[in-house]
Length: 302
Image (tube, rainbow, N blue to C red; front, side):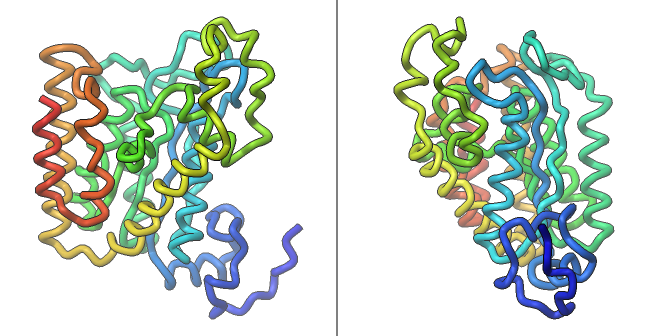
């Protein structure tokens, strides 16, 4: 139960509980104080989708939201928007909502939805936006990153759109679907939403003991720490990027999108993701604002 209804407008972010970086839980005075402390908005994205018998159906959004909340707490500022449930693609399994097909070139819902969200966030006075998608079919990744690059130019503030695993590829997290990585992250972030005792009955995820023996809350903590450290660093840095840095950032992100789209057109939808090691240094380069290095990494995807 909230008991801090009479906080003065000038209270310090360091006095806030972890949940008080969450937009929907804030009172107006808390929102104003957080904005003055660090005007960065985290926008977590995901969907509701089958993730085996052993993990929660909302894994993608739950994971992205929890990572954003932890990152804002580490940054001692920033505001986390409620998670958006709904994305491109999804397994042909029960309890799965497919907003748009994964393999379509048309995009009538997700892109304009995200662009409108970014415009509204900008209208509120935020100086940077971090869209973190925990759902990452190939087209979901392309659209989210493309929107980030486009809105960086349109709004003249930096807008990053990336899957969370791109910030931890250098420590071996390459993204999966309710595999060792996602299971471990959810186990760390929401331990009550992982039921490993049910995986043996799953014909796909329980066909061997790879996930059961490889996933752990400890591994999830390792991945989460790297991701949230980098998100926190970006939250502190992005509002300070000047026009030239924003242009270089947008160009680098567009280079990644171009490589992914070209790989899809000329080969197959997942062609640009065929070598996970190719992008292992993305997180390091992004935090260091070494955007030319990211463009060089993009060239390796072709």
